[in-house]
Length: 328
Figure 1: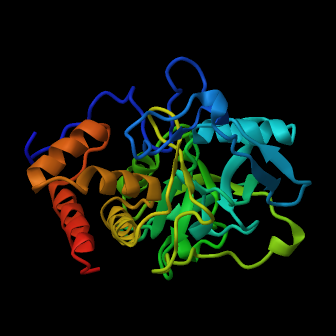
Figure 2: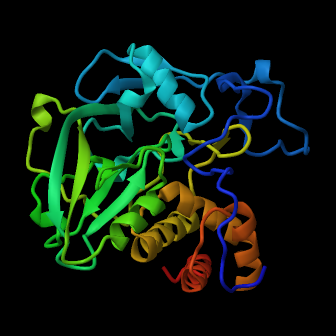
């Protein structure tokens, strides 16, 4: 449909980091599809002839090294990690790549470098805080782990949230004013926090990640992403998709990296969330569209459970165009 008031569609269809089961049963690493066919236009080789992808993992607070394989989405990845360390999957809050620290710029999203080392952060101390909302904005940026947990990715310096020292980057938001929000997507949590009445107190129940001794340091506000922050590393990336099997792809091009970063910035500005996989999907959808209306219709078809403002769609379209022309 052309740009105009967007309506939410049936929420039974989740996307992105809330990855769906692959039709016909779970697909293991042996069924990972190549992103493109060979030069002759032939289909990928049979599943049993494709190499298995094996990743190494540890618990972020300290553990032996485990080996995991055979996953096609984030939920299955958490299940494999849980099996490796005899945990329940809901104990895993989020994962970081190549660091055991709570570094939100190394957060695992929808892509994993083929040589990346995965660190799993599990639930630690629970805490309850009362916050007086003295301003319209709390100064929180929200993301989610792809398996039902929304958590804090950034705290704006000097904001309402920054003044409450118990609130930290990496904290899972479990309840808002007694309402359990398990399974609620990041953009919905951000909207709930924004809609809380001003000049009134509210309570948050939070769960912080378990920390090793060398991680007990002053809380982080969450660094802004650097311009050279790359998605994945090594020989390529494993793209975890919401529909169909995961794919092995080349590293993102310079255009893709710049466009994804700009769209992620726009997501934070308009919606109070950061989600590189959502940003990557929007760039993928918009790269070959000829005008904003065509882009809006493609977004509606691909990401119909979001209600994007028209201004946001125009700005994303512009950012993708600027990245194509090398203007960002």
